[in-house]
Length: 131
View 1 (cartoon, helix red, strand yellow):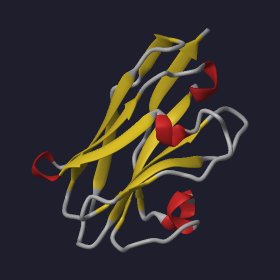
View 2 (tube, one colour; view 1 turned 45 degrees about the horizontal axis):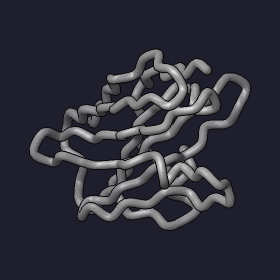
View 3 (cartoon, one colour; view 1 turned 90 degrees about the vertical axis):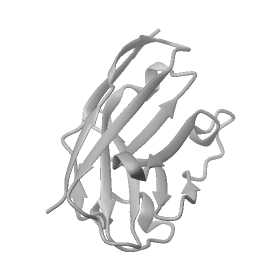
């Protein structure tokens, strides 16, 4: 059984940065994908970054002038069984509960950004950005 535990959330002012961590216990069979999702109150859970077992990273397509891909970086340290999400230039609209997830198979767009595609998910860590 795989367990995922997130940490690193907190309260920051707009323009600030945070690095979220997700420690995985138990073995995830290769190949796999791991992802970060977020969910704001009253909103659906949305995928914000995905990485596979060979280190390829994906971010959701966006027409925004300030897309997530320009502000987020997903990295995995397999030696530490830890997934990270570096978030820069945070804005109030980034306020949400952030979750990590893992799936022991490869996924394609758009499934990789859909939370139902993942077998394992953590309890989340809260990020609050004030203006």
